Length: 161
Ligand code: ZN
Image (cartoon, rainbow, N blue to C red; front, side, top):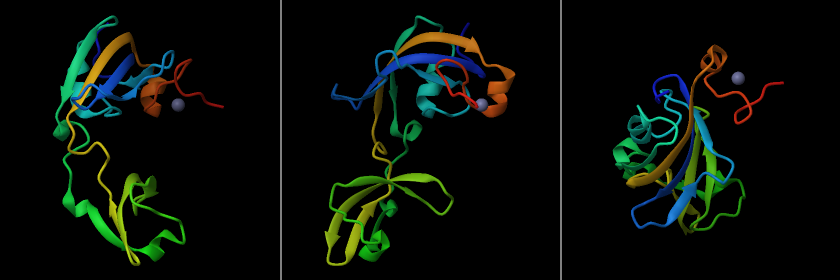
């Protein structure tokens, strides 16, 4: 079976940013499993996996535009220190904040100056070209229930009570 819309794909991967230093990978015995076509993984990678079968290995280079997007300098903002409610922050700190829409956004502290804190709301991988090495382990049709829920069930996926 080939990877196409509404197939469940199990794969192992590594990711580097062009210098060969692996910054992310699937752990041994814990492959990534996703439903193809739902935008669960970065767009540029999803497009390049289309049509592959179990056993395929592929190097995929994804431009920032089809990865985590370009950097937006407007996403670098200065906030009052009081916005952090006494939390101890220092330059280089990274954490997950929740925006007005309830979405999780990664935040990085850029600098502290008096009671002003400069923060960067860009994704840490924004503006980066992504180099994936992918090893496709399994491709199967998604069940109706999985498509209805929008996530994978079963031994490698999510379980219901
Ligand atoms: Zn479910």
